[in-house]
Image (cartoon, rainbow, N blue to C red; front, side, top):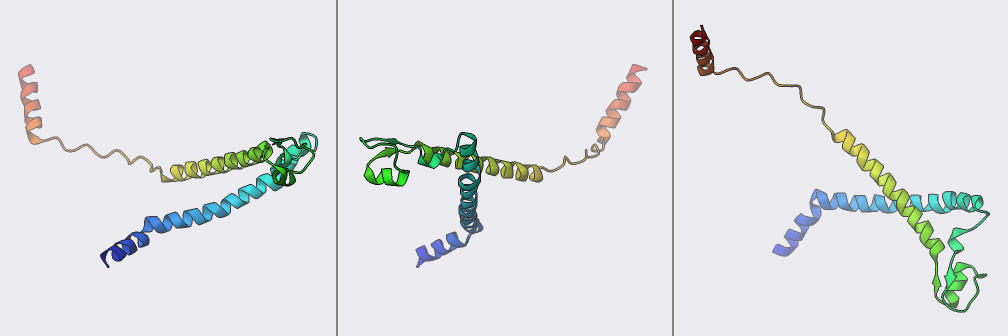
Amino acid sequence: MGMMQEFKAFAIKGNVIDLAVGVIIGAAFSKIVDSMVQDLIMPVAGKLLGGLDFSNYYIPLNNQGTQLALAEAKKAGAVFAYGSFITILLNFIILAFIIFQMVRAINKAKKEEPAPAAEPAPTPEEVILLREIRDSLRK
């Protein structure tokens, strides 16, 4: 029973729950970014580059032609699907940039303003007496 209680204490800790929430939100956010890239950015990029569809760019690794759609070409044999890789790489870059901006904003919010300079500590009485002796010896 000791191990079960130890596991329960571990699972209920705030860090584990925060991590679970972060993973769930991250997965949902990843779907949003994926949709943005596939449905908004890649069609515009394809149109600018002459109506090309990046998702269907591939090099067949057998003797088939490149006239087939990517899904059909995969069924026919091995393919080097670099168009899909470009799309996924773009997803990653956008997601990494957004996360970087979020961390940057959080770090700026966490920065505390420098505390006002504290008043100097009162000078000890011995130092005051030594200064008075020094000044009298100079005279």
